[in-house]
Image (cartoon, rainbow, N blue to C red):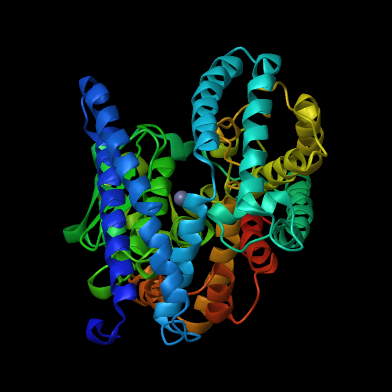
Length: 510
Ligand code: ZN
């Protein structure tokens, strides 16, 4: 498709999209700086800068002219021919425009106010373990969130929750997610019970030896450069809450965190963000697709599949540590000299039920997510009231993870998400794990000597597979279409279960 042959309404629409994309990337850059290098004194000016950019971006996103151009493109049969890039681009621009314009400004303002108030109340309530003082604010934010879902509209045959889910995982429905989560939850709970009863926990104390953060940073650089992250077009910096932002074709920034006495946490989060970074670097941001949905990530679940694959499928494997352990020893010095490959792999694949999601291991993490999915869905449908939330949480926690929750601070008040009205977001974490495992099985079928390659520190064909099957498509296909095209199958719980069993059982001598 060359610009000369394209209708003016399409090229105009793309120019508008590029302008709002540029504003969005400025906003992301300003926010990256705030999280990394901005001195504390910059906060007031930064708030002004961020809010101006956000307002300009919103004006661009919701401009009437954009709506008119989208409608003109939709009426252009040539542009909208099935399977073309232009049709995919217009379809996704329609989606973005509708999401940006369907909410009345009163509701947007009320939500913003409720979010910032509820977040403050949550902080204090969690400190004091006082759910009662949090409940009314949560009730308010959830009722506004319900209103938001109604404005988006319930998809045919679906439920209110789907309208919220659609913001993060386009086209996914609660019913489909439930169909995958239910067998996963049951079989994971059984696996954990089996390990707890019959397994021998591996030694993990060596994972907490003191290693200077500069050495951990150097090791993270070595690993991510080997994965294929292009440091001529990216950076790795330090922050409290790691994230990754892609500002454009030549500029992808990852951040990570370091603790002197927990190097697996740092390398895990570095590999995780690198997975996001490799996706951002692989999106077709150069040239004609720049600023259009074809150069953007398809969904949070697929983005997360990329981070989880490098963090877990690669980063906890025997093949990876065959190469990485000698590298780590070179960088860290004598401190882990006595650690052998077996110890390392077992230590990286532990499974111990605990109360806090963000501190949980690879298998149990999914149970934490499932718990939240069931609860927020019931809160939206009205089957569960806010006052009954702690009891429902604790009962379900016992069923899934086998533990008695000691208090609400370590229970239903541990996450900030619901204070923000972020409902429908949690499932994308486990969707990421599910997609990652399903891709991983296909990758290993298609690259039979992948383990040997990884054990040599060669990740090129793995990255090439991701580029070809995932990255280059941007939002051309939906997440489920992408999964079908890449793996030939619909998303299922089986690959993730097989993956977790194959890693955890050997770590426990089973
Ligand atoms: Zn992530």
